[in-house]
Image (cartoon, rainbow, N blue to C red; front, side, top):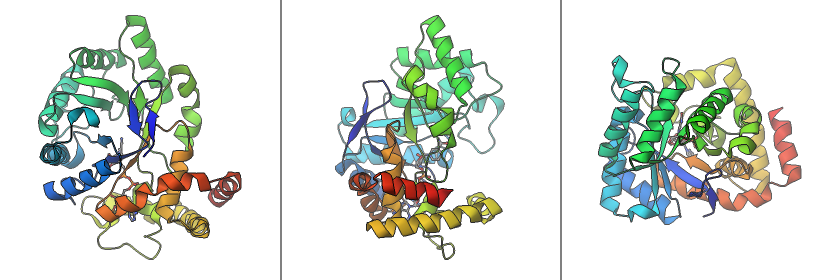
Length: 323
Ligand SMILES: NC(=O)c1ccc[n+]([C@@H]2O[C@H](COP(=O)([O-])OP(=O)(O)OC[C@H]3O[C@@H](n4cnc5c(N)ncnc54)[C@H](OP(=O)(O)O)[C@@H]3O)[C@@H](O)[C@H]2O)c1
């Protein structure tokens, strides 16, 4: 495993980390979670990602139970939660968003479900147009001063709103966001490569990136239809299937075919190739993997050895395939 600093902070996260979305509480129970977390930890993973909204809180409960079973020393791994969408099916106004009220309540509930005394990373899962940014910055600062959170960050915030949060923090001597959690993969590059470009230098922004395989599409496994045991066939994720059934989705599948061919020529799997491409970006602090079974994790960890194969000629071929 390699370890990378979370932006300009001193926290060293494993370059590959592991998240719970879709899988924990839906496809994977406590025993399955234990197996996946143990596999990840044995490969050097030290960051596990979660959110209040995943499986309506059940993903945090399953992860908390599995981590308690495994008894890894608490100072050897990091865990996150995210606040914004709420953890119940039809949240009341105080049960969602980024108000001081919900940021505090959601943190306390995540601590209980994950069975930890503090969250290493705590993210605002999206911007909240109904809450002043200063209210959220102050709530996060308070949680850090109370020792309940170590680093706070954002997920899919516009660059301008991240800058606003930094300016508020600087003006009032509050803790500023350390990291952002954006989608980043071969099919989705703009925000990380263009919109956020000035923020790496200005604020030392770290990135914990999500969906490196575009929900599995970049493995090439959907080329001949939807396998029965895959994410696109999971109840509740019909929207994912619809997205890739659209005209834009079909363009993406044509791109994936070309990328798969390049990966095969290099003698690596399409998943390893796509993850290695994410790792090659030095602004990425950690690539968050998802997996419904152990064999996927085992395959994907090999991506660390594939980065060196992505020389300038290969990168040019990738850009041509995506054009
Ligand atoms: N902040 C946010 O808004 C946000 C949004 C999404 C995700 N996230 C975080 O980022 C993490 C990773 O995102 P993601 O789960 O979407 O990652 P991903 O790597 O794009 O997709 C992971 C899924 O692809 C399939 N897969 C993985 N490796 C495979 C392989 N080698 N061969 C075939 N299929 C494979 C598995 O699904 P199946 O086996 O079921 O097909 C797996 O669950 C999440 O767990 C979550 O913690 C954050």
